[in-house]
Image (cartoon, rainbow, N blue to C red; front, side, top):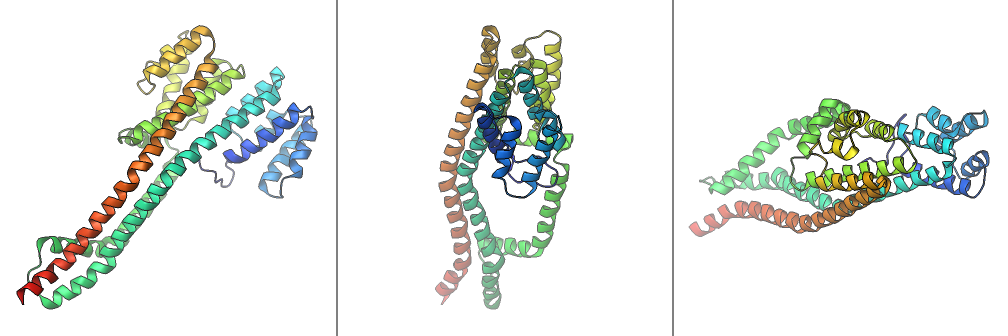
Length: 352
C-alpha cells in the first residue's frame, strides 16, 4: 500500500511530499518567489536527510537551475512529479501544479489510512487467534499428553488427532519458521521483477472479495493520476507514458504499452482501454463521454472518487464481518482442543 517508511536512496514518503507541495504552493500563491519560499520552508525543517534534500534543491535553483531540474537532481521524486512541475513552469502555473500534487498525495494517504484503519483490528484479532491456538498446541497439549501416557489405554479419535498435530508442530516448527523467513526474504528481493509482479497480481485477482478491492484501489489511483496530468495540459500520450513508469501493478503497467501504441495510431482512449478486460465497462463509458465533451479530467476525477468511496465501504464492511467470524473461529478451535483434552478424563472417571 505504499508505506510511509523510506530506506536508503528511495524517494521521499508520500506524507513528506504532501507537506512540501502544500507549503510551497501556498507560499508561491501568496506571491513569494521560489528562493524565499525555500528559505521559509527550511526554517521549519530539523537538521537531517529531509532538510539536506530541500537545501540541495534550493542551491541548484539559486545557481540557475529550474525547480524541476533541482528536484530531478535530488533523485528523491518520481518522473511523474518532475514532468508535472516542468509543465507548470512552462505554462506559468507552477503554484497550481504544486497545489494539485499536494491534493493528489493527500487523497492517496487518506485512502491508504482508511483501508489500514478498517483492517487493523481484524488482523490483530486474527494474529492473536493463531497465536493462542499455537500456544495451546505447542505447550498446553503436550502436558496433557504426558498425563495420558501415564494412564495408558486407548484415546478417543479426536484426542489422538490433536496430539498428533501437536507432536507434528513440535517437530517441524523450526523448519517451518525457517521456510517462512526464507520465502519473505526471497519475495522481498524479487518484488520488483516482472515475473513476480505478474505472479502476485494473478494470485491476488483470484481471491474472492480481495480481488475487487485491490482492483478498485489501482483503478482509483490510475484515474486520479490521469486527472492531475490532463488538468495540467499534459498530452495524452505523455500522460500514459508517465503512469506506466509509475505503476508497478502488473495488469495496468503491461496494458499501458499497447494502449499508448493504439492512441498513437489514432484510436480513442476509451477504445484502447476496452481491449483489456481489467478496465470495467462502466469506467470506459464514462471516459468515452469525457472524450466526447472534452472534459476528461472531470470524468477521471468522478471515476477516482467513485472507486475510492467503494473501496472504503467494502473494507469497512469486510472489517465488520471479519471481527465476529474470527472470534467465533477462535472459540470453536479452542473449544475443540479443550474437549479433546478432557474427553479421556471423563471416560476414565466413568470407568471407576
